[in-house]
Image (cartoon, rainbow, N blue to C red):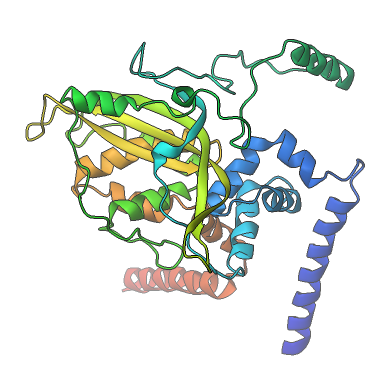
Length: 369
């Protein structure tokens, strides 16, 4: 009987999986290709790559297709695949100043050092649903092409103006004005590898930043929104110093020559958040800065990350913000716990029912006395 029940359960699971595949493969439309997903759903692809910690657009697109658009499930698929890959090289440290920007905005200064580059953004567009037909969409694309809009420049294209592609940071100007608390370290500690060891509080700054870079975007934004009050309980003025999106070179050491060689470029989003210091024991005549950087174009995550970075530093372990950040923002952890609730819990619930009945019986015995 036990084997028959187990076999029946396995057959049911296999049948359920076949239903998923059948619906995905036999939909009443053409099979969507990875190229279409990469080209048309770029932000979803970037988000999945960032949360999975793997830069590969085609694999991310395949994961999104297999997950039928469930981004957390796509991240799960991509991380699982990533765990099977051999680690045959380590990338060299890349200075963030090497970022070749294709979008750079400075909300804090009207005329910052270097240009403001709006790049590709929907920040200033009306949120109106476009119910146009495919023909209208093609006409719109032709119109945009005829307008000769400025195109984002890939690193392989001619470099052009160095000042425009690698503008000077606003942070450096503030440092020269002696308006910034300088928390830069003279040593160079080895960054915490969250892929091999889970980060637990109290954690190093690199562990917090690494965890946030792979956190689920919505969870991280929610965590920031819940903690916009400073450690003293008052709403703190946080201003974005810079928001950047661009290409960073990826280098490894050549196995024969021993020299660093560039093997490609990855797109990242980088944010520096400036916070007004007004605590009793803080340097009230200066600002402090939080930092965020993540794979792909994901400004929501990078902004929340930069603000949580400075919030954790100012909190200094007084509250549970670091613990909550490290233990509750990973999409796989939270969704995995949620999904397991759908598995059989017969024994657990039976135990709960027996305890309820025991309490009732005890009350009944007490009343009869």
